[in-house]
Structure formats: C-alpha cells, structure tokens
Length: 96
Image (cartoon, rainbow, N blue to C red; front, top):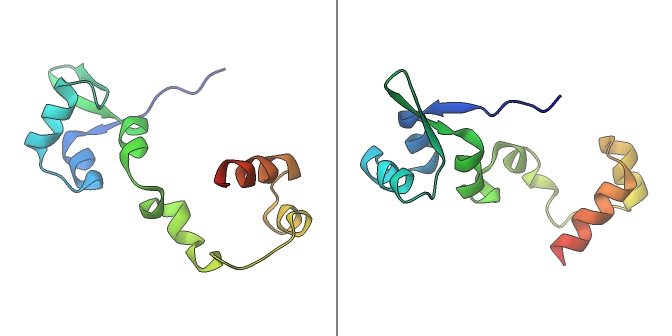
C-alpha cells in the first residue's frame, strides 16, 4: 500500500522555507509548491516543501554533519549504519 501524502499548514511551510506566507501563496499559485484546499483551509504538500529546502538544512543531514570528510569503507558504513551496500554505492555514484 502506497503511503498517503502529508500536508502541513501554510504557516509551517513558510517557516520551514524561511519565507513569508505571501511569497508562499505566490509559489502555490505558480505551481512551484503543491497545495490542497481542505474545508476552506489551504494546506501544503510536505514533500513539495522538503524538495525546496537545501539538503544541508534538512534534519537528517544536520544530524550527521560531523561525518563530512570522514573516510569510511562502504562495507563498514553499511554495517555501522544498517544500510544496504547497493544503496550506499548509488549514493556515492550520484555524488560524483
């Protein structure tokens, strides 16, 4: 079963993006951010917002920022962080 999309308030979306709600509404109108109208209230797709936030500002990136430029073998990283080897290899290939 596919996961249902998550929506957040316009105030929360504007806060996460560091912009005003008026600017957010413009982005909704021009299709940069996906939104929905639920019972008269506009809600914003959380995935749309996350797609606009630089990866360096995402919580999961900040959580592991101290690991930047710390060498580790793929096999050791897979074991240590419980991530399959092929996933790490794909990440490395994308980063190059």
